[in-house]
Each structure stands twice: as structure tokens, then as C-alpha cells.
Length: 212
Length: 212
DNA sequence: TATTGTGAACCGGTTCACAGCG
DNA sequence: CGCTGTGAACCGGTTCACAATA
Image (cartoon, rainbow over all chains, first blue to last red; front, side):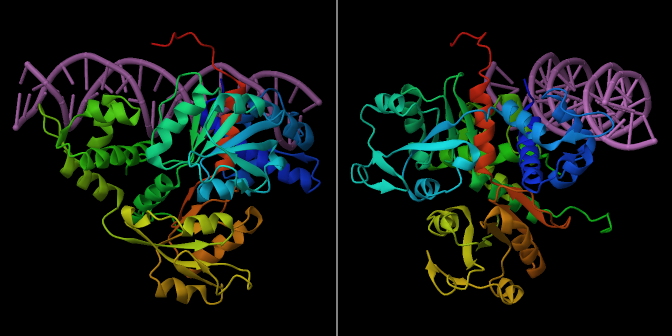
């Protein structure tokens, strides 16, 4: 429904609006949001219009209802249950991340294939093995999983998660994984980001614009 | 020069081709690459054409030269010097990442504003403070930095990096940062990825396609 | 013949001007 | 009068058919 590109920006707008909310601002405008979000006022209005008639012509957007509607549009209306698959360094860092509850996510479980890790604790969780993953997924009422295993193990781990009933995967491994069409995957790939950065740094754009 | 969307896919193609290389495959085709990279053969050919005349009509692409040319196009022709700004959990996890040298990146320095952390070691590095950052950046011949500080500190840390002569920033903080036009920023934002995932999981697409 | 490279059609997203409305 | 919502023009990227060529 919402275009992918718009979806990405809506996340940013929500952050901006939440920031305004904590600053005590009551009313804002497409221009003000655009300034903080690195976008144009045109684009902000068009993007926000995907979520309904959120503003008031002539006076702008009320911060609190706007935040509420953005959260609703993005699906942030309940606490989502998340698991960590793969308790390496990254998995541990995520387990210790203190801010999930601020964002309506709850870390409920951590899994690792290595028997030596099973039973140890990471952050608030006890690491479980992969035996009867489906039962554990059901018990924890898991919605989504962080996939933080080595690239070579990513496909197998993803298959196991899908078979166990997970509906969404946030893939941190630097590799493409195949999943059935009804499962969603989003990737967080810092090596890809680093490589894109390398391209840009190695090909500096001609500077025809003088700095303002 | 290369469109952003293409650039992202080229990174994936390079991974695929590197994989083929280690498998000992000598020749491949746009179709084979597409299969592994989750793309169409059309798109692979169009994307690869941005990097020059890389294939041979009638017989496909030779793996080794293709890998070489992709690396060249992406700027992976030398070792890039990278620093870590912010030695929290994520910064530490990155410092311990064992595979950078495989990808022609070298971690050269780590910085933190907290005096208590200065002098401690993370991975192979001794944490430095921010006094005379410019001299340190020059001494280590740094090209780019991982920005792994809390969101509230991200803009200030980015400003310091830019002032010190860094040319590219890989931003891990969940916030928009402002930099001069000649500095490149790429973002790795797992909270944004998680939120996009939430949207898709909460709005499952109507299933008109039967699984094959 | 098999497969790439590419001009052209197509499509979706961005930009914009202005209509709509408080 | 000011600012939003939106239809329409515009633009860039994707898809495709086919020409080029080993």
C-alpha cells in the first residue's frame, strides 16, 4: 500500500514528531518537519497524505495526533515480540540494547546453535537451543527475529525460523536469504553501507555548487 | 554517476561473484548471477553495463575479471582506513569484527568522549580521546568513520569528525545528521529496519499468488 | 547459436502548482 | 490569508525486445 520509499521516510518523520512532542511543541508544519528530516515540504505532505487527512489547512499539523496516526500507520500499536537468532557479538550487543521498550518492542528470546552457549545469559535472556524451536516461538508469542548468525549460516537459520512460525526477519548477515512470499525480510547490512560509502568517497561529485 | 539503486545491487553482485570465485567457477552468466542475487537477468546486465563492457556476447562473463572490475567500480582498489567514533557496545562489537581485512578495510583508531574509556583497549585498538582529533585523523590517514554514539550525541560527533578531515561517515545512530555537501554519509539504522518490518508484518499483502 | 549490451517503452515515485479549506 | 491535500507534469529507474557479436 505505502510505497517503500515513503515508508522509510515515515519512520524519520515519526522520530522528528516524537522529538517535537518531548520538546513540548503542540503544532508543527510540513516545512518544519522537512527541515529536521532532510526532505522537502512537498514530500512531507505527500508522504503524510498516505496515512490519511492528518493536518489542518491553514494551521498545520497537531503534534500529538500526528504522532499517534504515524504510529498507527506503521503498525506500532502494540508491543511486538522479538527474538535473537545467533548470540555472537552482534547478538549480544542487541540483547543489551536498553531502548527497545521505548519503541514498543520486547526482546523475548535468544537462540544459538552452539550447545556451549545454550543456558548462558545475554542481557535479560537465557539462550535457548534450536530443538523444538516452533514450540518456543509459540510460547514466547514471537512475531519477528533478528538474524545475527554468520553469513554462511544465515539461510539455514532463516529456514528454521520460518518453519517455526516467525513472520518477519531483520537480517544482519551480509547475504541474500530466500524466504516464502508471506515472510518479510528487511536487511541491515553495514558492509554494504560501507561499500557504498567507499564508492562515493572514491568518486567525489564535481563541486559546482558553492557552499551557501 | 552510478544510480544509487544500482550501486546497492552491485555490492550484492560482487558478493555473488566472489562466492563463485571461491567455488572455482570460471564463467557465469547474467541469469546465474540474477538467480543468486534476487534480481532479473535484465537488471543484472543493465547494472553491470554501468561498469563497462564486462561480458562476452554468446558466452557470458568470466568470473575473475568481472570480480576485479566490480571492485574497481566500487572503489575497492586499496585499503581504506576506518575509525570508530563511540566505544559503546556497538562500537566494541565492530572493533572485534574479524573480517574487515577480507574486505580491504583496516580499522585504525577508536575514539570516545568519555575520559574513563580513553586508554582502554577494544579489539586491536587503544581508545583515544577527542583532543586534537584532526592530528590523530591525519596520523592514521583515516578515510572514514563508524559513528556509533548515542543519537543525542551523533550530530556533535559528526561535526567533530568533519572538522578533523574525515571524508565519509557510516552512521549507526537512529537520527538524521547534517554534514557539508562534500562529506558522504551512509546510514545503518536497525531501528528503522525494524519499524519497516513492523509495517509489513502488520499489513500482510493479499495473497493472490499461489506458491509455486 | 547463445548471450551480452542498449535504445525505447513503461512505470512508479518525486516535484510542483494550485485548488481546497480552516 | 496560510497551509494542507492532490491531480498533473516530470524524471529516473526498471523492463523489455532486439541488435550486436563472439
